[in-house]
Length: 500
Image 1 (cartoon, one colour):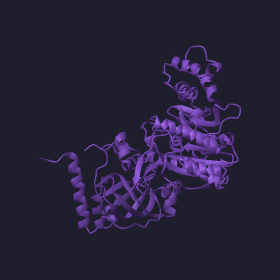
Image 2: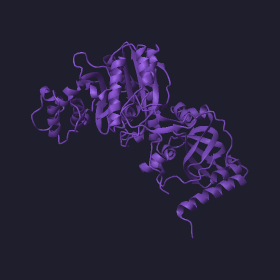
Image 3: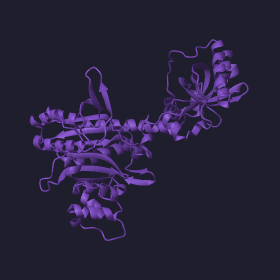
């Protein structure tokens, strides 16, 4: 049986590796000392013309992956990349050792090399290294994609992220921008006396949010453990302990479906501020995200999926106001009185074509109605506040409307980006909220929270008035990098097992 084209290409590369060994080159050296990265060369010498480089010669020693090769008999050009920038080098047979030129003839696109030489400008003005030495650093044994300059198969891109980064420089830029977003959020909070902390990722109980957990088992202690849904209850314990401003950049795990907005493992920045309420965090959130946009993007209007999003203008609605404001169904707009009781909310739900969930309270149906009518219309940065108490088991109730709590969510581009509230610090009320969650769990709701007696005990020592918030780093990065799927901003998103 003859081998296919792919197998032939691989065999050719393995044969070249054997020849490189026979020439006496170490095929996998331990290190390479360089004076410049490719990016530094491109940036530092961008304004040097041919005359300047000739008058004041500049010698560099750099390294990178070969992205293109062009041969002309006794001379050749090649481009190498450090993942961010590219530079060309030029090799002439009569100006290097014979073995060096033989080495070059055994190179393939994808190989990693080191280059030593002087900078000059070609006739077309391209900055180029005139190579006097070439060091082999690693062989690319698998051929690059046929159209290596534009890998577009999303299955391959997500599964083989290393290949995606090699051939799509814009992907590298997205993840560098993600890193900058996180760094700037950290800087913002630290400048306001927040302390960064770490809390457990394996919990003995499910709590901090309503979601289905991933379950594991500790063999030595013979006990079940749950991967963290949220760090909330641990961070609030620290507030009880006197750490008045804390934050954590954390990985959370929720055993839920996968979509363009959901990955079972995701990143949040969660923070708590004592002696504050949710309105304080509303102001802080606006200031932080606006500053991050200024620092990362450089302008306040960004484009996401073809829509202009203006971070210079922010909107605010209560949940009930938003339902009335965004009701856009070619019929008379409902009045606030239509939202006053369960029957009225259920009737509005039916007008949208949705069926009210049987047995659910007015508050739960209000949340369902909001999702049907409002959510996808919240393109510009918008705070939605005053949520039903049924949807917020850890939030403080409003004094004048105990059916609603002091909570807000921030929506951008139709996605929930942040969730915050004035924290419930009455231990007796918190126990009753937990008991309600336990009853839901006993009825089969596997997203409901468990009773956390130690957290109740912590509250009994006294937690100051506190506001807390979580911001979804992945979704914010999607918006600021114009990435349509959450998998575009997570280096290694969860995928189905690869087919043989």
